[in-house]
Image (tube, rainbow, N blue to C red; front, side, top):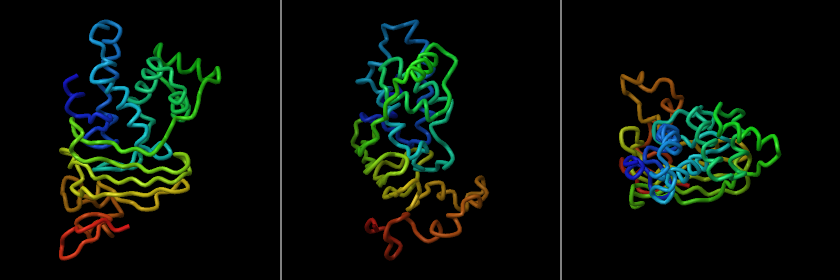
Length: 239
C-alpha cells in the first residue's frame, strides 16, 4: 500500500512507464486475497481508488493492445500478460465495467478464479462494451508534479491516430534519459518511433545494444530522440 502511494501518480501513471506498470500491478493480484480476508483495509478505496485507476491507465497506455515503448521497454509486450489477466478480471468484478470485458476479449483468455468465471460468463452473455480509449494528460510523480505524459487520440485504439508526448520524470532505474520523447501511430502502424531501449547503446551487459536496429541509425545521432539538436544540445521538439 505504501508503494501505491509513492510509485503511482494521482492519475494512476507508474513512474517507470507502461511496460513496467504491469509489474507494479502485481500487488493488485496479491491483495486480491486481502480483499476477501481483511475487507476493513478497503484496498480498492485506498488513495482515491489508485489501484483501479492504475489498471485503467495501463490499458490507456497501449495501441492495438501493445504498450507504448517508453523507457527501456521491449516492444512485443502487450495486455496479454499474467498480471493483467488477473487485473482485468479483478477490476471487472469490482466495477462491472463492460469496457473491461472487451479488453478481456482482446486478451483471448481469463483466469481460473471466481473473478475469471464472472468475466467468461458475462462475455458469453454479450455484456461487453467498447473500452473508452481517449485523449489524456497523465501526471507523473506521487504528487503529480513531475511532468506528464500526453496521449492525443483520434479514432479507435486499433486503427486510429495516436500522438504520445512523454515529458515526464526520468523514471528511476529503467528510465529513458531523454525527457522530450514523442511517438506517433496511425492506421495500425508505428509511424514515428522513439524507442527508449536504445539507451543501452554501448552497454556491455546489453550486448552493446546490437539487438536494436535503431542503434545503427538515429540512436547514434542524437542526444534527445526526435528532438532538434544544435551544438550537442537539445533545444526543442522537432515535429
